[in-house]
Length: 530
Image 1 (cartoon, rainbow, N blue to C red):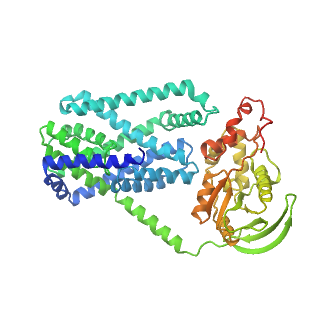
Image 2 (cartoon, rainbow, N blue to C red; image 1 turned 120 degrees about the vertical axis):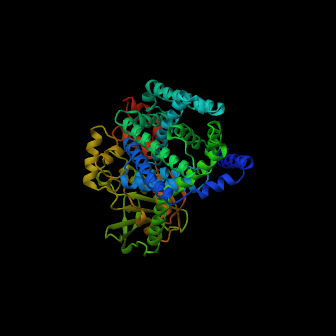
């Protein structure tokens, strides 16, 4: 059904447009295209800039409340790009999907990045639905029977869902956040994000005001479209029709916004005595102007493509092998390879046994002075290093790349210590980095990928619980034939830290679901082994 749904959306939109062509002919669509002039284009670009800035600002407010870093300039650029992709690709939401996933990857939390975009867009739709309900209640004479029922149902659904979220949050949300069930815990985390992103007193006034301002911009563009199409009715008479047309654009049966908007405009303008054909022409002009208003997004897309192309054409970042020597350890005998990367950072790889070129057991281990050297119980890094070396020796062959420059997920030793202090004060590891104005995860795995390539490895069975590491290594040319879990026994000091990595950074840590006794203050079960 998931694969079928996008095609059903396209078919539904085409069916609506086809019915309009059959009833009104192609002339109304062609007339709409002819009515677009230089003045309308200039107005569309100006209004589009304002609405994009308001929407991007709203997104940034929501994202930052969810502890996701997002600069204002990046928000505006990414929003423009998403609007352009929404307008030129089927379904009308693919740009937003790309925006959500891309920001989530950059922030180190893809699901939360997706939720930030969903909440931001939902806030806008709630304002449109609220305005539509006001139209139905205040000027019912302009609303044909099918549409008034749709608006009423939409309003009821919004109220019911809001009440359900509040009641569930008050009764079960806080208990479920520590549940052993990942589904209950995931639901509780999502519910907490809804509250933080939309419902707190620090958030909803700004989000609501920006959503109203965005709606005003869209209505202004509709007025420009109506005047360009030759409609002379007073703006006060047109606004109710335009609000309902914007509501129709949110229906999941459209191609880049086209389909339901034209159908609803035909119904509304016909019922208002302005003519169904005129309604379709206005909708077509609006669709063209909306696409024009998103054209700066094409510039953002092109600039990214050019920058990426230039990056690809540059000489790849190379690592220079400086030394090779035998290194006996308490785990077994390794060959130690010393490298300098392009930044002059010293890197090292340990190779045990005769390593094959494919399906090599490998670990890319991020430098952690506190865990690897001082056996800090704040994290699991030292235990993972120990477990990885043992696993490689038990395998008979394998590689461990020790990634220097990754201290504190790339923020450095002193910044990591500051973040640890904030965690002692109650923040989690993600919130602490953001509070310091630092990225959640700043690690770059390109040097590690180059080292694996230099050692002749083409594919690896990667010892890792981190999906972001897998993604980066693959983007840098390492083929991951298998991700091998590297699970170590937690302790009372690092359990909350690991929970955060599981819930907010989506590390694969299924054994944490077995640790309910530690949450009750009874310590970690002795029966849980590495």
